[in-house]
Image 1 (cartoon, rainbow over the protein chains, first blue to last red):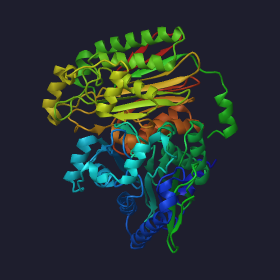
Image 2 (image 1 turned 180 degrees about the vertical axis):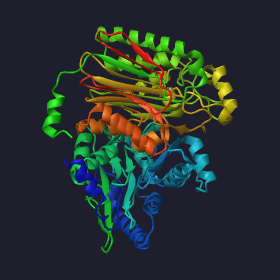
Image 3 (image 1 turned 135 degrees about the horizontal axis):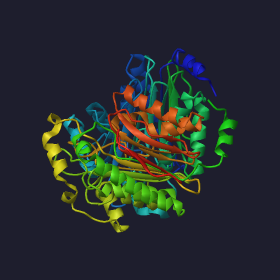
Image 4 (image 1 turned 90 degrees about the vertical axis):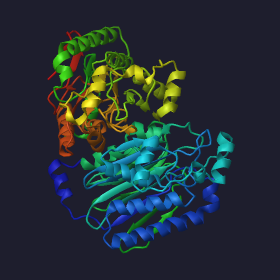
Length: 306
Length: 306
């Protein structure tokens, strides 16, 4: 463990190269990934290339995270925005969070039904001075701020309807929460996460994604976005724990792995992406698959499923 | 900072004496505390005596925390349950959380309107295997589990109605979120928090109280319950940060003070109560007042307002 003076010296090191990591959910290698794996790879590659162009032109980490998450919310392959998992009553309930490392400004939303891009609603909360808003009041705030309105049925895909009908009888499925963490050219970090929760979940259930410190975190040292068994991730306080460990000098990959092991000790599985100011990366997962990608300045996007 | 072997040795030390700490909100010395200070002292003293009797007879930390929070939700003097602060539309929106250190089982609720004791709803969520539930679905779960139903108007007191009318024009008022942390005779910890939020808050706003790792935390080393500017407490991840610091060997009082200083760096004020397995206590606050009390085995309750 680093001494405090060593930690402070580390904080004065030059920042690493502009970087973005994305994930599209840790889970089994479900039918969606088996059938549409190449499509998922292509979508994540496109998102990373666009993010890289933004970063090359000096965009702020939060803006890059927002665009990447919005792209994953739009594509219909993942469990966020369009194509999100259905609750037990057939409705879609969406949640998301975004956090900016430079000033720890943060916004989260849960229980959304009619905002096309939940990550936009999270940003509207961040801008409002609140940190967490739920339900129709969060929607009203987001829509007043210019977020696009969809009917709840607009989010529903045939794939998710079939999954809900198959329910627990069906084969294990990919889970598909999405997230991004970014280090920009100014040395600032941001993190964002968006999800539809769990196939067949009770309406009103909230997982770790919209909760600052559980599924999403960014400060001036580290940014984290999680995916997996949300209840276990909340009970570990995964994202805040990793940031605390890094503050105490634990290397990022060690901190990320230990947090995931702790999730395992509560019978949870999942994964996460984490990035520190010096450019260290961690993308561990304890499931079969976690679609994920890396872009770092000067390199091509690298996307993997398993 | 302690080395890991030293931390592990510390974890093997005998547990401290059975202890409970309670708080009834950090804030200005408002009119309620000036007029009803003695009543608040008496109520907290009664709650501590009852908790002490429970602990003396071997009750588990979670049960003791539940009873203490329930008592504070009932009394009408504090901003939780009966007598909670009103939202801008005149409604009462309640939230609460409870966490058990031994297995980190946790439950939180937000956006409740009709459950008399929000802490009971939090416990129902803990038992359900969920961790966070919001709105009417959380209410349905709690009521099905035997929690008592109240009409929303049953929570409204004349004092809170007058405060809402005075609004920002009025004098600064005590804030009154309540919480308890406990170490039982078996060496196990628990924490619970309950609140009505902020006078005049927008409906749908959620603060730190119901969020595991923000306003409420318990593991096998430390239990924490917070009160204050919820948005700043979430952005610091106060409770999880304190637990992380203690895991790294930082003394509890130092960890608690540093977390509150960090809240201050985000222009937030508030306070917290924290208790570790060895019996160390911390009850810091950065406001004029924080009604709070301590009971430790073999001693009389000690209650203070400022």
